[in-house]
Image (cartoon, rainbow, N blue to C red; front, side, top):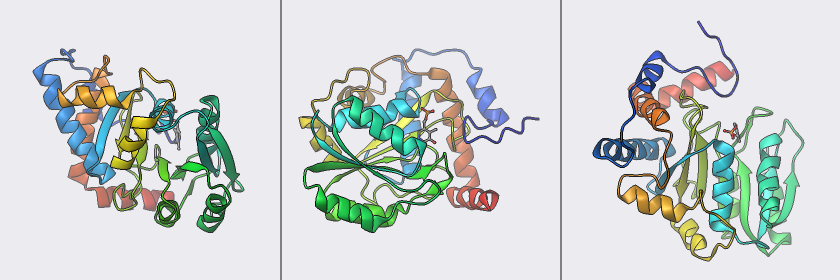
Length: 269
Ligand SMILES: *Cc1c(COP(=O)(O)O)cnc(C)c1O
């Protein structure tokens, strides 16, 4: 038996692997349409959101890039909060696309301090968006999203959250915490192979989308939403990973989200 203990890709249950060995279907046909609607609704339950939820073919990093290019323009002020490798990566992508990035780093192994974030926002009035990693996989530290979202939202800023390794393993409340874009990926807590990434998009993020000028084509949220209304992706999706995710989500609801969170907390201890 496998005993793979890395954060991702995680080992997959047999029923996920078996589902993925199925024959291809037309990704613009009725069977795919039913599947994408079902999977999207089930992911919304995991994200605890009523916002739009888009499924992108790519790894988590692709979805981080997508989050940035869909709500920002070159020159926009961004506060990038980092407690490790993945926080630094979020800042780096924003810099590559020409955002005006203020980096706020905390000692690795510690969590971000919401009061320091509040100060940084007050000192940089041009900030439009705050980037944060929920669970920093490189150090194992989880940031206090309830407290951080309170600070960011009191200041009226966009909140972009990398929850790639935490969503589905740790409690996450997209709507309660008023998160504008939340990112996750198939190969971490979902126990599905790599290949799909998920993003939730709030009404405030869609407002920002209308003005956002960063270049985008493959990652365009507008195209993804239009095609989702027809039960499709704009491009050819990772169909096999969809098969796996479909049954993985059913398995997760059989176990129960609360039980899953408790199991991870116990193993973490
Ligand atoms: C795994 C991970 C990423 C990168 O995801 P890829 O799928 O490897 O691109 C980013 N952020 C966090 C917190 C992660 O755990």
